[in-house]
Length: 254
Image 1 (cartoon, rainbow, N blue to C red):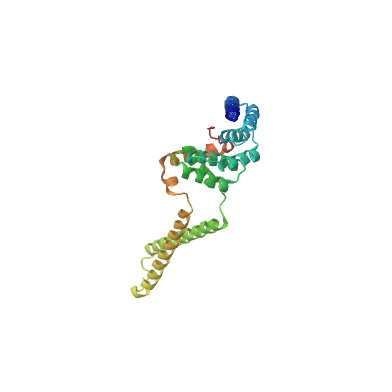
Image 2 (tube, rainbow, N blue to C red):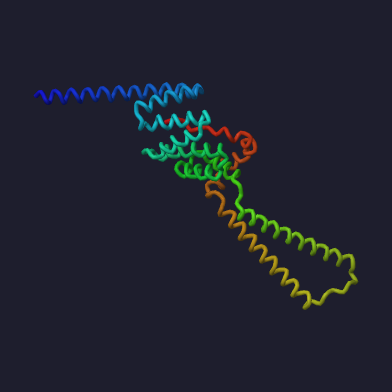
């Protein structure tokens, strides 16, 4: 009987400690959130650190602390906490929010390629997030083109230039023909091989241009990026947004 009483006493004590810790954690998180809303990010960081002292495994506290650090532009430390949160058990929407914020940090670091990948993974997890979709398109627009893309673009420009020159030449020949009606016309059987050769060259150029366009299209975003009407509307604001590209907002805390 005495042993049972002792065990019951220990259980009640542990339960009380656990409940008290939970209350302290929630109270500290609430204080941190209040400071965050008022934009007192330094105070918010302090409260969130206190919350982690109560429970170092708290996903909410780690995510909130990362957000506050991001607002204070302590990006390296914020990234550490975001990556730690990704190791926790999260829902798809929660993972999407963390990846969105990681993309924000990489945008601020001007690592647009990594930002693009982070936003893309976030959008896969939550396709309805318009903010992430907009940031994704912006990151793609800011990404530097690689040498292969530059070469493809140069080839396409050269082909277009050659086509324009051919058209100009044909137009001049036609004008000369109209200005000199007495000039002897080439025989039909002599003119035909040249026309066939020109047609083959035009077809070849069109085919190469089509192939290049296809390669470029394959490097663009998935169909949801190109076809989404909201994205097209938001792209009209890209130029304004470029001036404020360092102002991506962190997602709200859970």
